[in-house]
Image 1: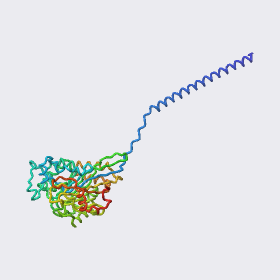
Image 2 (image 1 turned 90 degrees about the horizontal axis):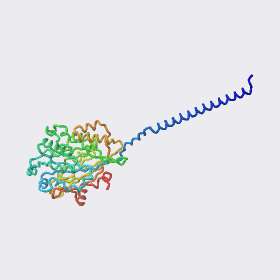
Image 3 (image 1 turned 135 degrees about the horizontal axis):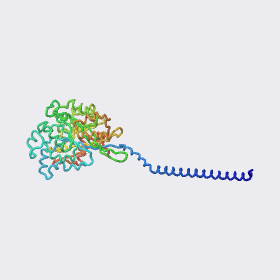
Image 4 (image 1 turned 90 degrees about the vertical axis):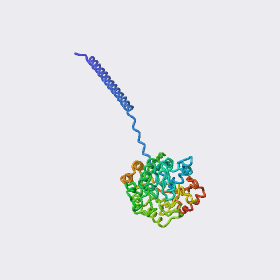
Length: 427
């Protein structure tokens, strides 16, 4: 018979042993859990540390806040005949007629456009038949002057009564090649209404009175960066010395003005007169009313004539002789160089696409307008303001800024005080 006290002692011992085993199990489980949690934390910490840095947010594209351009439009330009004689006799050579253009502050302008009133045909030893040039007005300008002309002029108007003086279309083709080689743009044609000869109209370029001229526009962005955008503009001639430009001239202007800002630079009008006639007034106003050109800035009369604001657009009837050799008095040696300032509306203007179109035009002018039409971009909208600068080449055939007295005289001839203040450059 077992002793009950022994049994109670033995049971108590087993209870203690069970409790110890339970404590060991609990402690082991706890240690395992702690170790596992610690390892997991380290792994998570390691994983967080080893993650790559997030890509930075891309910078937003800069937004255009301002776009502007300053150009100068110059009247009759020519370095043949007496100007060439003086230049060749001078130690300045081909620099001679351009040697004082610095007085007009070329560096302040994005472009100059002039009316070149002579073909550029290379003659052996730069030969000139001065008797022929003076008696029957058969002009030629030596191409070697283009080295200097390039420093000032961005483009030349060729639509006048003298650019076909050297064998018609043959001389015109050579003229264009010399300008291409010099990197000077050009527009217009000496083609006359009803006289579309095979020489002057053998290709589309020679048959048209309008063309695209690419001009630099200064675009400022919200990041304060400024870029020069190559922007296409329309420039049109209207050679009306030996007749009235036909409807095809005006229609062509309208086509260009539908897609790009367009300036008409007609070469017509009664010579040596101080003011315009009714015939020219009607034609130039039609260019604004029907063709919708931005401005009409004309030459040919060889004198400065008056200007007017018509339907909010500027008409200058004659700028006069900018660089020419006539000297029969003050009227023949002075001009009104027209400063045109464009402030372009930045809203809805895709400058990058226009820049590409402009650069493409510089590479291939024959497809230029078609490319602009295909792009279907909204037409550039802008506001023009104007100023003028009187020049003289009196005595020596060297063009330069005139005196203040002459500035005042030219202002009176232009009737500049009648031009609204909203169309003028703020002083």
